[in-house]
Image 1 (tube, protein in one colour):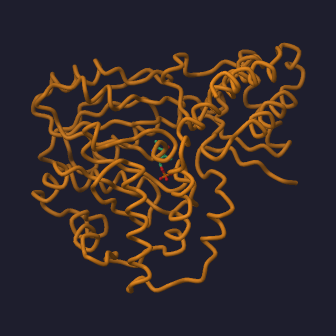
Image 2 (spheres, rainbow, N blue to C red):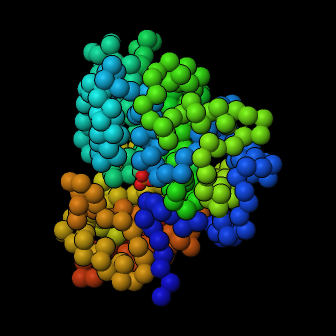
Length: 376
Ligand SMILES: *Cc1c(COP(=O)(O)O)cnc(C)c1O
């Protein structure tokens, strides 16, 4: 049976990406690899609208977060952490392990981090030198407006480190224009590449801050990475996963294509309209903060986990809830090239999976299609 992967990482990758990954290997010390690396860096600069370079680690997103934490923080650092859920909590835990003094601010799960909330916490802790934020909280499907949050901060603000693991590639993330100082991303979500690459981008202010700190990690040392990245023919200090570089190079052509972010948001809106018309409740109530990459929902009758099981039996594979939402949410991802055929497949399968409860379903296909057409 064909399986339709709809988990928020890994996500289905385009055929061109799989084919690129299967290419015969090349050595990682040589002109061919440097040319590939340079091409990837150029495409990432276009995607992030930045002039700076991006360090690429052979790790998942958590490794990229750890690299930010170990390079920016230590026992001498006070850190304000604003968390909207499981992944905000993880960034906080990783940072606390460096010995940093943590000030924790918890946002109600399903809600976005309000600019005032972050601004207040920063104003109350003028000695904090780092602020941790999550752009897209994958456990709830909340899309935080990082640009609005940073704009609300006091002028003399801390360095802002952002978990962009499930946002980069699928939604606008312009670190230089917005004032982000450290950004972590990963290959297997918005970047439409198999798992295995952790990406880290720093602002000039970020590089400056990191260069003044004592090294506390060998493998995740950003300064060591930058030295090789800045060479005329860029390379890696240690062996990179070359096949994943081939894949990322191909995937960046898709995510850098005209209208990609708008298409993701359009799919999210249409799918959400259909899901509501089927009788489900969306976790994120305010449309402005709904993720263009992943939608979380439950059924008021309490049949959410049964529905998820029935969906899997049909061949459609979403993710369940995490943390406090374990067994109480379905999370469906739409990072990949989801258009009307994929939306109708997901909604039609949800209808079938609802079983007895499907009698409460409205005209879900019509509603979803109206929104699909409206937001063209
Ligand atoms: C997936 C995810 C992570 C963790 O990434 P891994 O690649 O599983 O290590 C961190 N933050 C967010 C927001 C994520 O969605």
